[in-house]
Length: 86
Figure (tube, rainbow, N blue to C red):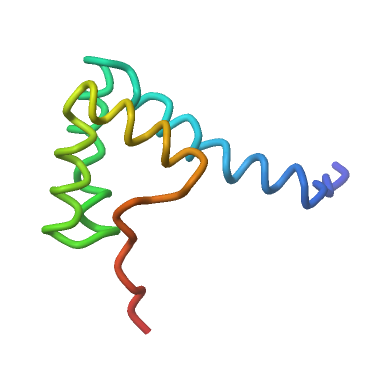
C-alpha cells in the first residue's frame, strides 16, 4: 500500500478539529454540563487542581459556559494551562 502524505493544512485542520468539537459540545445548554463532567479530569491534568476545577465549574453553568466557550473559540483559553514539566 502506498503511504499517504497529508498536507500541512490538512494536518492542522485534523488536529484543531477535536478542539472545536470539544468546545462546541460544551456549549450545549444541559448536554454540555454532562460533557464537562466527563472532561473534568483532563482539565485538572492540563491546568492544575484549582484552575482545572474553576474552568470546569464555569463550563458547567449553562449560560456562563456557553458565553465563555464562544469567546474562547476565537480568543483562546481564559485560564491558561500549567507549564509543562521539563
